[in-house]
Image (cartoon, rainbow over all chains, first blue to last red; front, side, top):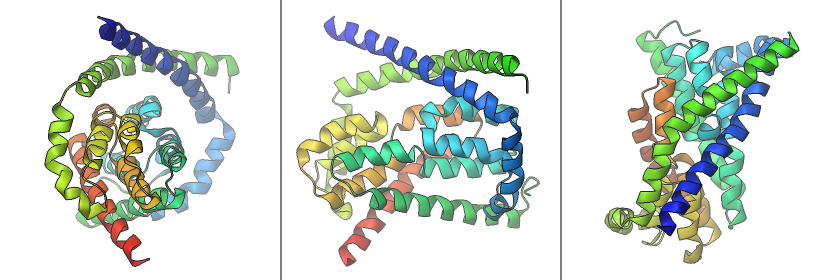
Length: 149
Length: 142
């Protein structure tokens, strides 16, 4: 009974935490999405992103996933995937990258606190993520993907 | 950009998304609490214990990895800390768990995004194992 109460309380705390984190995040996201400097950033990043087979549509999901993680950034990720109509191949590349390399600060620091070394934890993830995206992107190009850049 | 309108849209999306995600995540939360209390995870990890040596880890680390995948990083840490691993082993755990943690919840989100979530979830395990073995080998050279 005690345990059941604990679990229910935990569930309630989880909901609360989500509202408190996601609402401010979505507000920031709306502002960024409509700002002029973001539009300029999209222009500037167009070419570098092409090198890894991505378009400016992926900027927000990537940045959210990398820094916030899939769980907290989830709201933004789902919103972007549905609204920006990112093409399936590109969406796959983004999720592949994020699956390998997300929440880089939080996840890595947790292990550093208990004795791990930062770059041994994060370095391989970054290298692996980029390698996979670049290779898979080439594979998509070769097999004729859905209008890839 | 109209500030008031942007703020309203942001708040609206925030509430909508929070409800939406809560509906998806709450069941998983309860599922994970059940897993924590059950013997299922320790049962699964017994099968993996002998394989830990390929990552330079003790057999007991298997439970930490299984808990990290199925539940979350904090569950994994709780199991890992008493093992007193050295920095190399902790780093490898961090690397592997970084890739493959919170699999159930994040799988659900990947599904909502419309991606090939089954493939990606499986890939995360494969990548975690690959990364772990590779980095362990590299560490041995140095």
